[in-house]
Length: 157
Image (tube, rainbow, N blue to C red):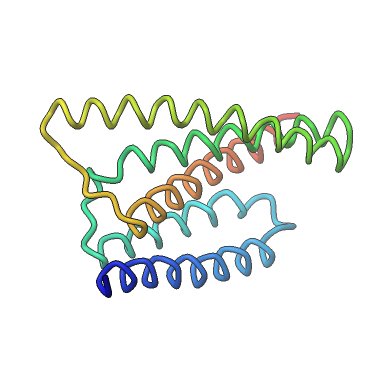
């Protein structure tokens, strides 16, 4: 029983520390459109390195990474659309509706990839830590790609 509590405590403390870092870095760069996308990508690399430190096989968390990438990658566009159309409240409603849709799309792909991995005899030993880090790194990469793309579009229009 102690081993399970230790694992959850490690996952929870990692989540808290990484969340503080992500919020602080995001707040620092929030008004720098040119850098915010690359900054999210850099934070994704940081979390990927942490995954390696924890000796988590990237193949085993690949479905979580894809879920996070799809989830945040598309969610950003829906929030911007809602915010552009109806201000702050539109961004909130767009975020709520978009999160529902993007979670479902992400889950669709996550499930398909998990099925494919099982067919190839790659079994994931999912833990609170591996699932949390997998989704977190995917979300950071998805946000980084989308925010970079949006910044590039803003240069054109």
